[in-house]
Image 1 (cartoon, rainbow, N blue to C red):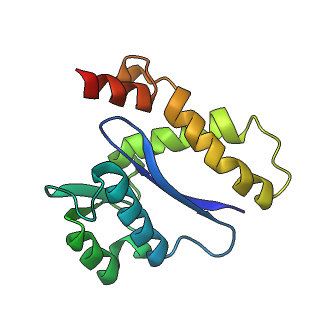
Image 2 (spheres, one colour; image 1 turned 30 degrees about the vertical axis):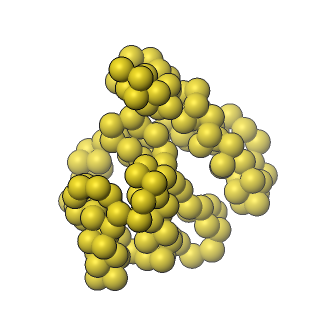
Image 3 (cartoon, helix red, strand yellow; image 1 turned 180 degrees about the vertical axis):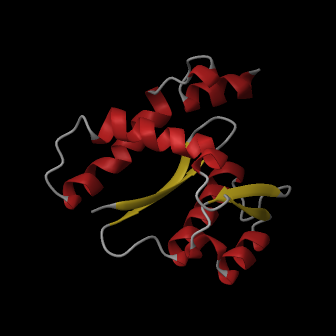
Length: 150
């Protein structure tokens, strides 16, 4: 079994950062690493330039005091989805459905090691090539480039 977590930008739908593990689950340390990686990738800095909402699951790695404290240091405002309410995080749920349909289920994956080897390429393909109706049928990175040049 492979468990994963990802950071999805709600504006352009890009997967900015991700983690996948084969033992146990996603830890608080993994979540904090994702937060830092996402802030550095988006803002080329160790802090967001303005407070930004960070919507996540309500599991213990996300709601832990240490994670919330770290979020504040990065200028992130932790927000959590209600229990048993996947529709409250629709973009992430839609991404998971798309990722499973267009990547996981169409590739042979005999074991977890193979999945771990493939995931990075799948995320890159999704970010570079996967069209979204909400982005005028552009991929996340195409949409972002168009926004930057406009």
